[in-house]
Length: 313
Image (tube, rainbow, N blue to C red; front, side, top):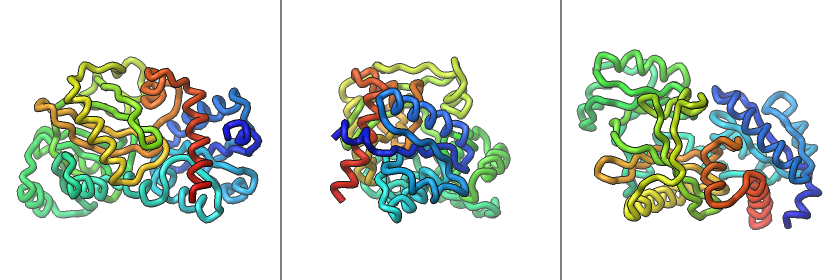
């Protein structure tokens, strides 16, 4: 299978229109470089006015996009229409995972722990907002996040109610709907799954107050513990929660699940990334490398999975 795929024209789709464009380009460059090094026929293209025309020149699409338009089911839908195999999850799973409010509701419905939260729309009156927070019994500190944004863009922690308005205004720059969650203090665990199986985890210890955009993409801002000190029970709880969350959403390919392991050793699901970063310094390749899986092999596995997934349809 792998050798036959080397005859395919693989399109690496990177860039896009979201606030995560810069990160997407880095992922795309790393993926394209890896595939070329492994002997594949690679074409790199962007989500621009030539997108549909470029689809005529590829046999498989490696989606290296992050955020809106790339990770939310829209590109996946277009590729389905054109019958082109692609990496990652399908339309519905991508859309659900990108929508933090809907995915949180699903996690809760199926019994997974997730921080209590409320949805807030732009322009909503403060009186109604405070009433919703009181009804949900959510008190400061709060964690604020745009509903459909990634890389922690627009996110923040609010310790006092008087700080809430500024945090919401910042989040509304990136989305017209925002999630206010109860802030859960604990350890930040990133759990990777590959093709329906657990790959492993890494603990992130940011120097910032949380795993912010700067903490993620500024060298030296975060310590990564590839073999975190977890009891077997803690590890099992994180693994079970991550795999269950992936099953609920319907994820395919490779994903990364953000978890807070509370001081009481409870695993709280925050969100699932259906198209996690794939530079050689990103978390999923880091986790794979700890299992003896090279970056090049990981990228080849992802492409092969895309072709197999299409053949099974």
